[in-house]
Every structure is written in structure tokens, then in C-alpha cells.
Amino acid sequence: MEQKKKVGFNIIKNDPTDGHKGFGKSSLSLEQVSPVIIDVEDHSAHIDIGAMHARSAVEKGIKFLKTKEEVPDAKLYWLVWVTVDRNEEGPYYAGVTACEMTVNREIRRGYKSLPEHVNRMDKSLKRHIIVDVMDDPSKVILREFLQGHNLDMWNRSSDELKEGLNVTEL
Image (cartoon, rainbow, N blue to C red; front, side):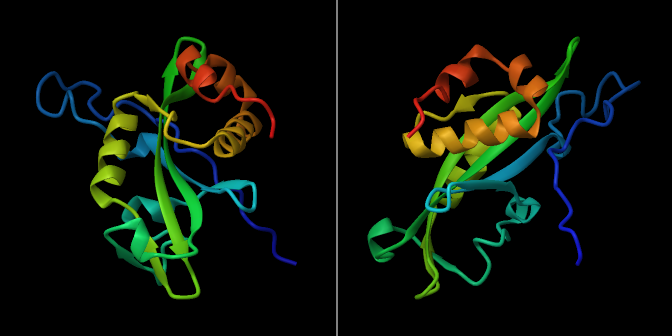
């Protein structure tokens, strides 16, 4: 039986501007960010690199509409952009931003705000924490996923992230 390859977070390989003083010095690298899909109903989270180009397993075959109301009986997902950085102690979760997405597989329709998804990815790259938009069960799933992926990275992360995801088990 073929084992499923475990996908990890993109960790900074090295400084792409190393040795350069000018051009590109303030540019952000997408190598630092990974998309995590949270399935609230299944109480699961996984990294899906396809989400970088709006082609995650959840998004495939779905036509996204402009309002939630156009997608009845939709299943809730969260796309969470997780940026990893490194300090003196090691890698940590530096930017974590969440965006809502709903999908009704039966009618092959969904709702998401593409501008919001792009802006939140940008905010994650700029080391922002935006998890207050998530419901408590989703926060628990994300916290458990980040801790389970690498507890040391979690421990080195900001108090803002830990407090943002500090909800009681549901």
C-alpha cells in the first residue's frame, strides 16, 4: 500500500537577497508561506500547496460566487496562510491569517472573497496574525495542527498567536 507523503511547511532556505544591497532587498518570498485548509466539519487540517493558485482539493471543480447567500447548505472551510520565519532560537510561525470559504459539492458552487484571500496572504507574509475572524472550533483545530506539526515552532511563536488561538476545547 502506498503511503501518503506528509507535506510540511515551507521553511526559508536562505536569504534570496544575500549579498545584494539594493534591488529586491525588501521583496517578500512566497517560499515562506504555506496554505493550511481547515475542514471544520471533519475537525481536520492539512497543508494543500494547490491553494497557492486557488487549486486546492477543496476548490477544484467549484465555481465561486460573489455572495454566501448564493450557496445554500455550504460546508465551511478556512484557508489559513502560515508564514514561517527564523530567529536566533530557530523557526517559528511568524504570520498566520485566516479566510473563510464555503463549498456545496452537490451543486458545485462555493463562496470566497478572492481579494480577501490575496490580502490575507500578503498580511501573513508581512508577519500579521489574523485569527479573530475564526470560530472557536476552527481555532482549536488550527492550534492543535500547528502544535502537532512542530511544538518547538509553536513555542517560539508570538504571544499574539497563542492568545488568538487560546480557546477551550469544544
